[in-house]
Image 1: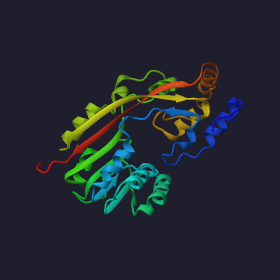
Image 2: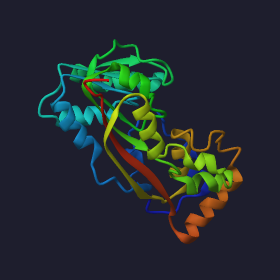
Image 3: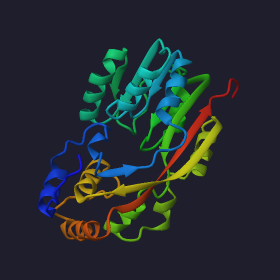
Length: 263
């Protein structure tokens, strides 16, 4: 909730530190940070794909929030739905959230092979996977099956990253580029049928939101601690107090690929 009275730097730091980080529920940020949403409405679109599937797998499901929403919106649900997650607190949260849907959550490290048979699923989905493992995705998709996902694009929220880390090398700016991911998917034998990218405005309205964001999305500033970056945090607190929200931009792309019937 927005605060009616100004909060001190120390109060806001304590708030940002205290908020639990498990799951991908970002409702705590209401009134503190905003992010423009992509025009395609991923979760609602996923509900439509689930309604047409018979066996679905959600990769790196986080706390299961997006899959939970989509299953609740789907006109009908697949006979079999599974999800994977590598971080134990998220896996526990996803299990609790998704069990009422009959969805099993399998604890799998994000860089490990998928523990499923070849051609086991006709739909694989993922929202913001750390790295899509295309050969594994292609392997567990049945011929004619679909991979439907929303990926984080290049230079996402880089204004905030570079505020703390300084200018980043060009190679770090080009990772996650949709053209590179298209090439990797095609090399694994998939046909890309839809690929759309958007750049979206992000605003941080207080320093607590910045602290919580960097604790939650740990790859943005990998060595982030409040103690290590207290000077930069204080300067950013003063900038927000004087000038208003810190503005950054996220990048997202919608990715849909299909496994052909004949390889």
